[in-house]
Image (cartoon, rainbow over all chains, first blue to last red; front, top):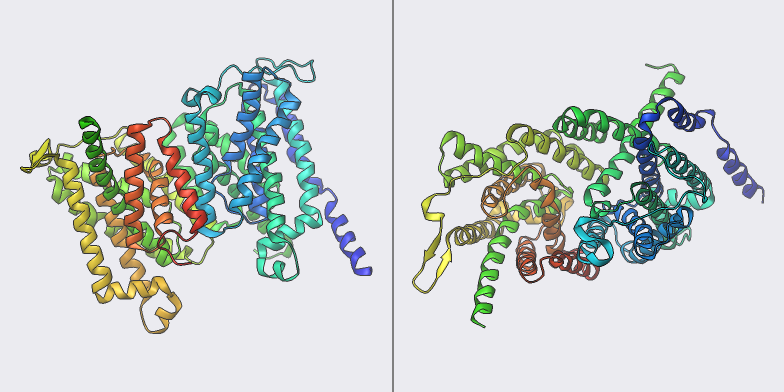
Length: 329
Length: 290
């Protein structure tokens, strides 16, 4: 039994908060007071961070490479949007739950099928699933609004009290709060024995089979959790824009979230924060100057990241820190 | 009834011409993925660049269409060699994720550069008189350019098939696709095969891009928009299988054309449904080996 308690001690130790972990949250609060004109952009960034966080669970921790994660973002966005537009239910918190359910149900059905495959087949299946849904949404115009987008979404005040204002103040706090709660959950999850199992599967699936881990079951569980979180981010997106277009399901969105995560560094939760923030802020600034310049730049950065900085911005910083500590140049 | 028959013939014609285009572009991708195990999402960008090389040669240097196609094959094939040696080869051993991200980065850079030079709209070229209008073959009249595309596609298929099945180099490539380690151990220089097939595959993509100008139109976003189709053709056909790529291109070309004709809003839906169904039953594609 001594062994067992060692493990628990180890897990408890990693559970403790590092002082640096408070920084991004302080920064997010500071933005509210210092840069009030950027709150609408800030809200979108927070939503995309949540989406990238959901991808980190399956890609960064469990090692599932997907080109179709927008499927679950879109499912959440359309679920929340359609319940409001067609059934007239616009209560925000339950809207999030509807989005989470939409994402999770789709994740359960598609995950149960695609997770039996790997490599290129898995890549193609995830890609085709997302585009299939996009085509489905395009063809079922009466429900989804098709190509013109879903209009008529009306979201009630938050907790029945707080109406969103012109500067998006309410929704900034709303998105930040949701992100924080989901983040706490993810942080706990990846440090639990379940999270360790996922890393084991990522690192050496044969060995995990050999020690008796139900690999497929674990992968499906994390896939559903990740889909639910992607669904929540989609629901937030639908609520904050009061408008959903086919673009929520697009290949471009699946690709973009992958880039956010890799840029920041996958498998470390905060990578989703750093990558998404850098990408969207730079895009906002540079794309205004010259869209081609921006697109070329992000392409070049991706190529360089893959060739030289395999662990993203955070990985590069960690390397630098450990080099400084060991006193070598 | 007669109108229906006419529509059917037109779908068949357009569908086969489209399938040839898909085949010419995708076959190189299939070999790259089969031989080197590289998920090259930049393959559509090579085709797009090929299209723009044809446009430049014709509009700025007055080269006629057919020589321009041939030149674009040579230019893109030659340009792809240093790319393969210097960067692609570094990532053969890397995981799919690295390859995907690297090639997406390359696609972004290419799209941005081409948009910067040529602008975002699809350019137009002046076709030779022979390829305009219709060909009257005695027993019927056929759209000239589509007939030409089908003939060009058939010619490329015959050349590729002969090279693959009847030459020593072809035999080496097949051996390397089947079992790279074994091929290396009997003295086949696999690295050189990589360069050769990569260059030929990229060159063929360039020809496809040139042919596509008059069929689907080539703009910078061609590189992304049609990429999904190329990937589907390769995955459904089976990696490294030339015949599989042909069959998959034919299926996709005909269904897509028929779908757009009979059900414009939801036609593409079927393609993805069929793709998923085929991959579920045969994960390695129709003619791929597990």
